[in-house]
Image (cartoon, rainbow, N blue to C red; front, side, top):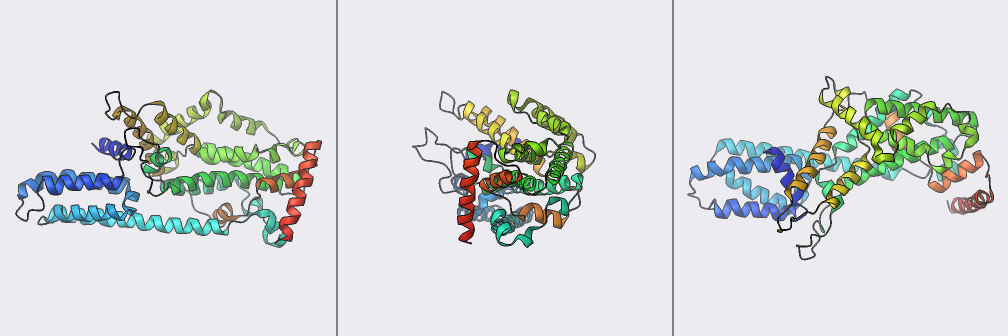
Length: 417
């Protein structure tokens, strides 16, 4: 029953706004069941109340963000008031459900405020480096020289950000017009999938942070050491089951400003990196990664400790899989009815994600390392190229022209500082 309710609440939003659905539920209960009648038969209330309470409990627990809409809260209050009148058992259940919902929404608001504060404190490293060089003498190795510890702190960030992504955000990311819906776009006035977007932005930040840390050192020997350090961090992420950080690190190391540093790479023992790249090889629809993910999922199911329960998928690929599942099947059958089998499959993928995101991180938090990972200034793409060319000079005319152009732009920016 819970799976059915989840599938229904998840997929319904492709056809109807949550507040409209809630309004229909209200109408069904209050008007059709004549709950407005003060003399309403208590037996009738007792018959319908458990079913409605189950629906509302599942809704508020699994899709709490729907209730940031005032219309949803108004309908919820009206309906729960009708159900709980005159029955102590239902009144207590309603009170507990409402308190849990308010706690979740308060926690979400606090998280969003903290995220906004972090984002506002992040600046471009090039500007800081040129204007206040003494303020960023630190690099990742001065903050944390142990790959396992860094992988653990990355896992803290991943699990925290995953935990705030609502299942409905996957559907909001795929929203499209329903041909039988008079060209109206569902969710046109609904909250954007900001937690999902913030998580994708974290992946990009980590990739750029890795590239920055590699391109920043002046000495080739130091750059090589940073590369080898991140290879070890990536391997530890793989062992933990943190595939998202693993892929972000590999992406950063494969950025052109990093990969062109041939003299630096010649000093690196790359055998371990080759193995990691093989694991995340995109060929055959990421076959190797999917095999490793299945292994981690199986380990999670049979786990005896929270350490073994960790599964953090390569998130961009998860979104693509859900997108193609949605695009590959019609939402309606030839007779016009909803293709519930498609949405059942969609819900199964999202429910698996819901299981992964509930895992508590078992590692100790290191505030200093977390602060650095989240707020240390990073180079923009142009600044990465500039740092790369200054570390190992341009090899051809195209690179020389780009280097000259970047230095001019950099000088103009810094004159304006």
